[in-house]
Image 1 (cartoon, chains in turn red, cyan):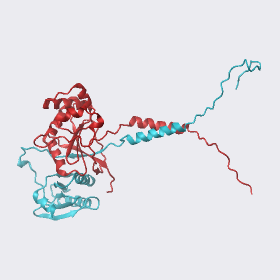
Image 2 (image 1 turned 135 degrees about the vertical axis):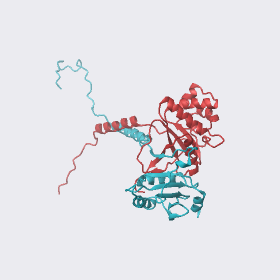
Image 3 (image 1 turned 45 degrees about the horizontal axis):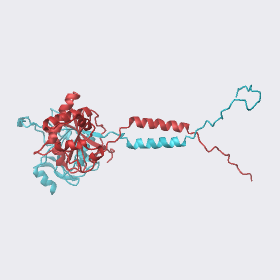
Image 4 (image 1 turned 90 degrees about the vertical axis):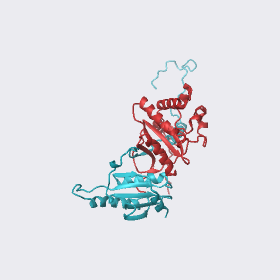
Length: 205
Length: 183
């Protein structure tokens, strides 16, 4: 019997094309990447079937999680600075230019105003330690959230000449009264339209 | 190649020829690196923006006059009570004399969605008048109790979106209804 001889093929493959494709993809991902911000407070948003995306501009996010802790953040950095200035005026705290600049890089925070200076001066990794930020006070005795909301709305009206939208990002396990408290605070200022931040789920649940 | 060797064959005095190198470079390492970086960027990007559900609440004006309140037919109203542990109760009409007694339902397509879809069809038929020949739409009143959580609220709002309920409102729960949930 004659053996069928396997023809010996070259072991090296031409990788030029593969290299091209992979670098193309790499470039795409680098350009579209917006690095994930480290979350100050872990929030698991409930899922919904709606397909509407969260707006990018003129947005403030109120995060509620960890048994009623409230965190606040404005999207646009220049609005953040203006908001801080307004809050500084309200509570008689002076912020230096450097502090304002550092604050404009903070995505979200949750401390009372008297601890704000300390928070701004921490490094970003220290800032995001669990349990450090205790939430913005929002009860009837000391309602700082109202002031933040007002300041942010005024700041956005001044900087962007637009109405500020509010998104509520609540943890799925958060009790309803805590959510209601925040909604009530917003409604006191005639903010009657909210975006509830949700995750994605299929139609068939 | 097309090169004239004019040197007369003397090796020592000739040009120093650069050695012809292999034109192929081993790209394996480069491809490895590229894919590593791709993986890194893919994992760190948040490509999908979070979804958002619009919620419009009625304006809360403390000086609102009672006369402004609109009376609606009890046939049209369905009340949904959100209780603890993902419990759900619904009834039609008013609590004192409900048109349909409160009953337990579940979330999702086998639970409340069936009731909702049925009512969306039946309510316009039942409310046909000369003024509204096509009938009027169902109104859903959502009453989350103190023990319900945020997920319940989003779930029920999502149900409204799925069933395309046109009129719905989130209303504070009464103590009577709170009691009903605890039974």
